[in-house]
Image (cartoon, rainbow, N blue to C red; front, side, top):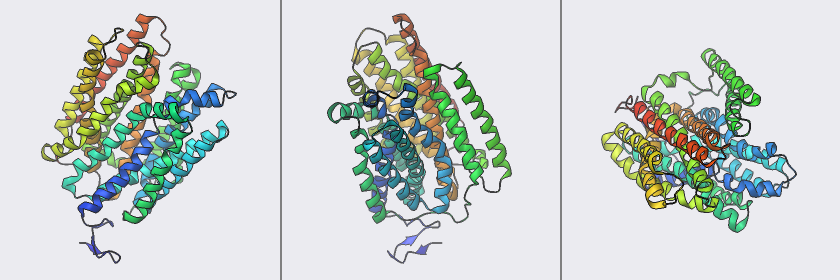
Length: 473
């Protein structure tokens, strides 16, 4: 049964979503997608700005400066799940506006920061804003479209995140080269203003009064768990996997994870309902998300490192060298979404995983020190780019559509957190494979290990996808 909205005269669906209106729904998708673009862009844009930031704060030790990169990703990943649960309870529109405002204000503080300490604190605040914004963004999009339109719609939303994070280094290099590193943060301001103003005008509230706010203990445990594991993985680039700090952080993270699981099984107000993983498509979809995210980010940063370290390209030129890949993925994702509406997500994810693995095999066979961009670099990119458009959006869609209506926020947040953790591990593994090599043959062997990881990740994604069912559950 629907209830009439007093302010618009339109009918509302259960849970507060407005009955389908094509024009308004497209506007909502545009607002949500624009906000998601900014948050995911910031996960990679700062990599090319880091040398300039380091020069500006040259008196700070490298271990402190590394937090400029790590603080955002760790806060983002650690708080996604509890933020999704809170958004389900307090309202997705309200959470979206709070997250957008927090992210925008924090971006301004980052750009104005006179010292590295304030910059790091502001980066944490950016991550908090992003964690609040992303799950509510997806929930608003899903509430705005009928179920039969969701595969294509979520594909568009997911493609924005995938392409924007991949475009970060090239866009960041261009901005830093022309305007300076502070503008890497200032570009978020107009985006934030537009999303907040447009969100107030066009977004409708949707929430579930049956969802209880999570236990503070659960929130603290998941934040500490995610922080320890994320920073432990991120720190391997500096001290290696066998470093004392890395071992302590990873072991601590695993112990905290066990405490978190035990607490979630006992509490009446869980941060994450573990029962969600009893849903077949949610469980296998998230496994596919982890394997593909890990191997995709390892491949992406591996390609940047290869162009810089082996072919001797500048970071800016390398960023543009890989840019055709995310552009093709973004263009094809909506078409794959339409196709998924007819044949389901499973065939696309399975084919995408195999295409991705094939790109790794091609690089193993042909990519070496001789510079031939079209044959050795662009051709395998033409294999992996459609794969990204097939897998990321459709995995997000398959997992999200398996969720009950009152768990969309927390479930969507779980999938995006898994994506972030997979990406963090992929970056760490890519750097571990090639970071310490100095002899040319050792460097090329290190990149071969990355391409092997790409093959393994693609095959694993395909195998996980075979367990998905046509009807979401």
